[in-house]
Amino acid sequence: MAYQALYRVWRPQTFAQVVGQKIVTQTLKNSILTDQISHAYLFAGPRGTGKTSCAKIFAKAINCLTPVDGEPCNHCDICRAVNENRLTDVIEIDAASNNGVDEIRDIRDKVKYPPTEAKYKVYIIDEVHMLSTGAFNALLKTLEEPPAHVVFILATTEIQKVPATIISRTQRFNFRRITPADLTEQMVKILDQKQISYDEPALQVISRAADGGMRDALSILDQVLSFGQDHVSLANALEVTGDASDNQLADYLSAVFQKDLDQALQQITQLFANGRATTRLIESMIELFRNLLLQQNSPELVASLNYRPLPDSLKPFAQQLTTSQLYRMISDANETLQQLRNSTHGDLFLEVLTVRLVNLLRESGTTETPAAAAPAADQAVVTQLQSEVTKLQEQVSQLQQTGRSATTAAAKPKQVKHQAAPKINRQAIYQVLAAATKEDLSAVREVWPDLLDKLTPAKRAMMNVSEPVAASPAAIVVAFEYAFTLKTANEDQTLQNDLKQELNHFMNNDANIVLVEKDQWPGLRQDYIQDLHKKKQQQLGETQAATPAEPEQSPVVSQAEQLFGSNVVKIEKD
Image (cartoon, rainbow, N blue to C red):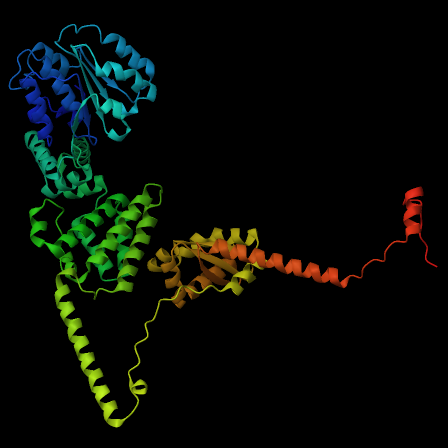
């Protein structure tokens, strides 16, 4: 017999074999035991959680000739026929490929005929949300009042796409994601029965990658077994899923927390070279950020929950980082994860995220007080304020004794420095625009990727979020996606010198580089066009003012032109 995938071989045949859906299976068994069979059911939940399997088990159980405690016996003729997909009274329909009105009308015409072998005729409509509006309307009346011998079971992964009129006519069961512990337990049972060796961490990696789906977990396990020649090792599991090991993630995040941008980017490059998936890396980072937050507030909770373990090398950072910093990191990582869905440049987004995280720590510093140390910090502030008040009282006393004016001797308050926005060199930009050409810009864009390859990893990651937007023989304008990278680039004179040197090397000229923010660029270009238009209007007005007015034409001449035509009349001066 041909090889069958694990998820097909180990598909549950009884409610007891269904993993992670205790509430659903128990309710269905009780309805069978009490003979309270509804006419329509709706199974909703994520993929691979057992919806279709439960539908087939339920179809067997209500038709089984010798049921046991609400379970099908799997030995009678009806059960064997359902298992072998040859019972004509259990009809399984894929709504993704049969979503038209005609298919549903065909069902509506056939439901009136009684079952041929079984007690109930069962219609299992998988992915029911794929039905068209007309098909849903055709199903409504039949679904509400079907014949007594018909049971409908609808299954969907996107309940929000199912009309409320359909939902209200069914008994709805919500299937939840299967926990990693349950997934791991089921995989251990399968591997033990097949007598295949495995590494426990490898099964945890597979469970995380499956995202709560048993079918996904067994499919990945199948791949790992094929890749590793019947042994489930951690290295093979990481290779197949694209995940990173705890040590690799710990090394990367340690470099980020220590604000070592070059080391962090080198770690990212190494992970990409090993075939790691960007999405899995960012999801793992968010998990560890979450664990650091829990470690700050409740270390006992982290140990009790079945979460991804926090590496020992990262635990000290739970006390060094602040809650607000971790919130920002989670927010930035989640934002990047959303952007990845519309892009094919995952490595670029992860490098930019790395720069953002490091700059976040550099700007805010790691000396802020974490949540656990807040009371001590408040006491320190109070002590400092008391000391300053004491000093001020002493100064006032001295001023009163010496007779000097309190206003001249009072200490000047400290000036708070506000972070200035990056300055815009409009004159330099206007000079570029005055001589800019499409040919110069195309030439710069052509060598831009080669220019970036000459930079260090940290500088390359910063410049990856920039692009040339205008160019002339004497200078180019480079626009940055984010204001903070523009600020960093403006303050990094070494970076500007390297850019100018490499650009001049590739272009064989001595062009300068002007930096702007991408959001400001359209406004600057529009301002230049308006200024240029105003200057032309002024020049035109001055030219018209300098031109002498033509003398008024004589009435005699005008009358002659009307009589004989302007092409015949010729005016000669005396």
